[in-house]
Length: 356
Ligand SMILES: NC(=O)c1ccc[n+]([C@@H]2O[C@H](COP(=O)([O-])OP(=O)(O)OC[C@H]3O[C@@H](n4cnc5c(N)ncnc54)[C@H](O)[C@@H]3O)[C@@H](O)[C@H]2O)c1
Image (tube, rainbow, N blue to C red; front, side, top):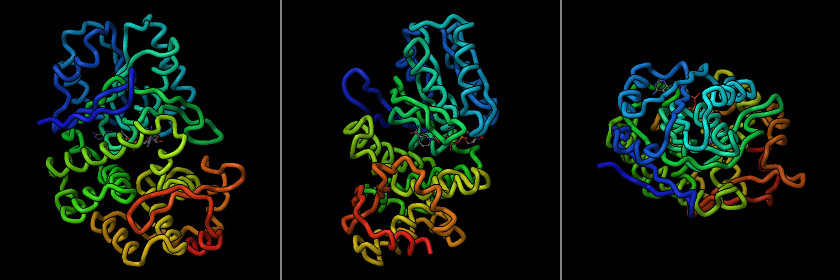
């Protein structure tokens, strides 16, 4: 049975459908039945058989076009953005037409931004194919591209019309990309989803094996957490900031490594250990809580040793973070109840100490 989770409020409300195979004709038509032309945006790393299946499912739609971008973060650029917009204009897309984001977070973010800005907004649906995009980027309406000065600096909040999550896509995902997504799943456990925390502690073996039932459970719980937060705070005015647990340090590690040799989720995982350690030094959690967090990550075979990143290395990037407001870096920490909170009241020496 497919799980359906509703996200958002009012007119921009949408459903997230989760099952082993959520991409059925019936499901996809909920988002596309009144649409005329469809442009599917995908990338060169997505198995070709996925595209063939999608075309079959959309068979009653005569005007289906596919636009393939190169795989990788570099494609989340102004240049790719304008190429997709030109394609839409050449094909004379109007507001009765729609975009389909078919791929990971890179495809989702750029396709969503095209949808948000072409003709001041046309509909799009998300069909995420990586674990990270299934539990995080396809839900919540953040769309965007990178510019030379930084990642995700240009974008818009723009909700998809529908999100279809098929766990079967995760079978072909590389180990690194799978683990990248697991880091984000663990994040929801650490910022307050106790049911997910317990499930992950008790079922790490099944999760590592990518068993369908385990995948459905961790994705459903992750989406439930994200849905609750982004519905309450659509445009990141407050509560939504807790979704950035581990991200300030994760982004700093990614930037320090020039976005090479480490996935987003792996960097965020190290960032969460750093943030948990600061939480301990600040007296918000006990040692056993830090140990539990590290043990859970290690039981999933995620790397937790960040000893090669020092405060000296990361400082410049930490202070460049978007979370710096009025000159003070806001941190997301966790407390004894397993609840995450945003604060600018901490001792900088504890941050330095956590980073050696
Ligand atoms: N919008 C948001 O809220 C949000 C949240 C988190 C991350 N992001 C963004 O998401 C992006 C990262 O997304 P990602 O981790 O999905 O990376 P990605 O989109 O680059 O995909 C990773 C790789 O996996 C390949 N791939 C995708 N699906 C596959 C499958 N089923 N089988 C085999 N290979 C497959 C892709 O071709 C790509 O090479 C970053 O740009 C990040 O900024 C956005």
